[in-house]
Image (cartoon, rainbow, N blue to C red; front, side, top):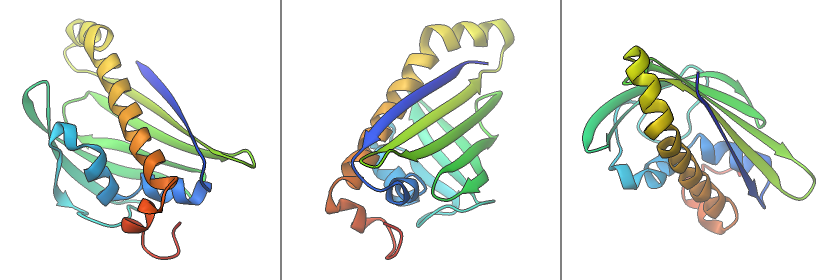
Length: 161
């Protein structure tokens, strides 16, 4: 199963980074390039254990829908979301937040597998791995920008930063 790992160093406390990564509102900001919209379940605020959220987005010129569920949650160090319905055969996204005394390391570990057997494996290797890595890097940059400025206050409820 292909795995992508992205590390983002953020000059902010781990709790702020953790909650920003769980913010549905910030997710909408970070995915504007795919015209992503929330079309079901939780539509704003912070996701918590057991929450499902459905996104509709344009990838490769095609509208796709993906429902993800928060399946693990250990604030402020870790959470995991897993695809419940969508285009992948499987998809699991683990989020780790570790503080070294100065910065927070936000580590995304993204496991995925495309359908269609051998054709899916070829697509994974030729296109999807690089595309998804860029998507995660861009999302991490948005979390970083919000966490390191006062912008985090526009998306996080009081007491979560």
